[in-house]
Figure 1 (cartoon, rainbow, N blue to C red):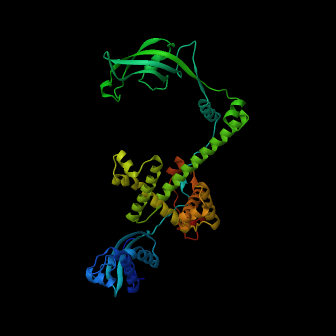
Figure 2: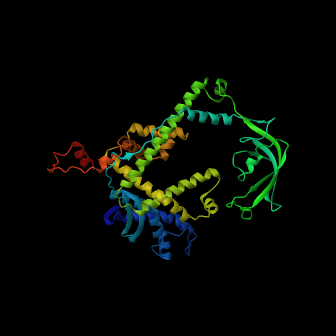
Length: 462
């Protein structure tokens, strides 16, 4: 096969003309004949036993051409792209210009290429990073959660119900003297003060004792979900069976030994502090990274082919469909449940896909400008990490993930780290005097040699 010409027909769009020799074409036709002839009937021959020449005479000389082109299609496209040296992101139209035993195949393949990207001022991106700290109250709050998880429910005796108690009640509701749907239950457990019921209901249970029967008078809110009850006054007949409360464990060394790997309250609190600090630092770092990502996307200048966004949208939808499988769903069922169609789903993903394409192009360009590439050691370490994470043999991981794709991901992460290292964290806001004061004009125009060193560096880097 020979690439005869490469023509740039529009921005990021090329036409590649490829010549397949008569020998290669006839070899493909012969291969097709061996498989397809078994299905063909030719008078005078048993089905599948007619020679090629008789089949071509009976059905026409082009009988195997289409199947031969299909057989060669992938090889033709890959070879044309390889010989063109273009960074192709999508293959478009394919057209056979001429075909025959004597001429072979002359075809035109339309391809979409990766766009030229410009990105400036990516060093010194201003970002806000919140200072992180952990107070004694934060530690107490975490311990309270653990106490709640390890609490036990006990029956209250000798006092009336109060906020925070769990009461077991029967209730029977009436509006205009008549019962209504959903207004009755028996042995219902209600946590007082949790706001589970209509405003005012729980307040009127507070103060009553187990065994009492009483009325609760409330008014349904105007925005209540049941149209027939909106704004209606209601009376609930209540019977209070039991009052219960949560008993929380005492925080002492024995409690700490039960709920953790530590032996003392002091060590336990110290560990909680370190863990909270680490999580908040990670959250602050992730937020700073989000700001850098937004900045990179906004700085990318390129005429991005729509095909790149469409391909990225396809990838996102395929990934989403894969994540549905553990839930026993497929994409078709999900769309049915959500009253969506494929076009609506694509529109939903498209803005995210557009951002992802811009981000990837921006990171690739910065990697090129700053010569940021993964080392062999980093590549092997990433393969090992994936092997351990997915509990797969290392060689199997290498067969599934190409070095090119893996190195692209590693390089993108290294670029993000580079941008974080070069970001301006929490830049000072100029004072009112500085922003309002007029700048003094120089009486002399500075030459490049006379400019401050920082200005010259910025001009070079830009």
